[in-house]
Length: 321
Image (cartoon, rainbow, N blue to C red):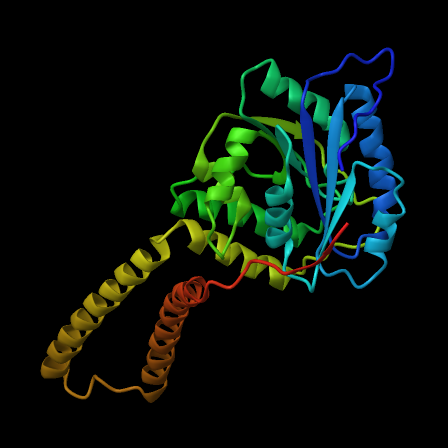
């Protein structure tokens, strides 16, 4: 249920209408209360007339849902999944449930500062943008290996895909109802929301800020899960890996033909020159590795087709509150 909040006397309402804020969370019991406190400060500073705060519990194994239920606020809603379906599914569920004239997505760990919301609103209302998105300018406090791999990912996807992602872009974004409708029209099973935002277009203002550490808990993203997520992102918006595989195959065939001619001529001239068991085995293993690598890329695309054709739901809701 949505209710109207009373803005402080010194805070003129920044906008009129309903604001929907989607907060995907998994095992964030310790972060719920601090997040709600900071979010409430931002709402009060904006003089927000009406809002709905939609927490999406993505199969948490701790007391995340219980902590959400403790919030004595009629504007708070909760969606609880039957199991863990992933952050992409949680964001989709929250955005589908959003009823506001504006919709925002942000994390519960306060790495997406709620204090940026007023600036985001001004970008849309005063500057004519369709959305405002947050971008980290630093990665202080993050492991160096993770930061390096993140930079490699952004360079790779921007080189291979027609869409261009901002390095350091967060999922934290405020958008108009029109842009939200466009985002929800893309119903593919394999979702990469940052790429979807860029694909639908619309005018976006990037708001930069320095990295903020988690207020509580630990990240749920391992290096392996980030690597798989990156591979899904690249293959979701680019067929360039398939083209690269074809080019690689052609080059290997050309090299093999040249080598066969060269070795045959050398054998005719020098005799007994085409030998070497060790080098032959190395070449066989090298070519076999390239073949398996190419088959793996093809298999990744085929697996995405397989998942799409099954048309399974993105998530299953256990309860709404």
